[in-house]
Image (cartoon, rainbow, N blue to C red):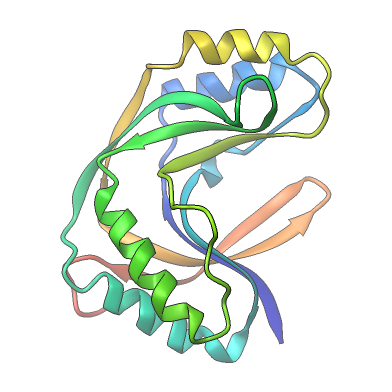
Length: 188
């Protein structure tokens, strides 16, 4: 049996992130805003995953995190991929995520041997806040992103990473935790 999966670090909602998400929700009908209780920093999207591979995936994550101790990050800045003029994704940035970048590189190398394709683009620390599902009424969104370009949305201590299952529903993706690896700890 397969399920859609990804490896991620949760980003807890802060009042300023919730306010930003609400502002985006009302800015344009072309945006599909992520529920703030599901915000995360994706380390690697795996896609269709055989349930039987979960132990090997968790081992790869645990090995990539072996030397990582809990560390602080700051959620700061906002923008869009690929650009403000051609938005597909609205994001908030993450500062201090270099340890997650190292984990991403290690996991990438380990999982390729299990049949997961290597990512072609370099890993970039960001949290997807909204996806653009149309291209109308985006001028207001651009203005909002300009005003929040350097805003700090909160700080958070990162002490664990998750293998998550993603189920696509008409109301958006629903995520659940399959496995967790705690930093600085032999067991999870």
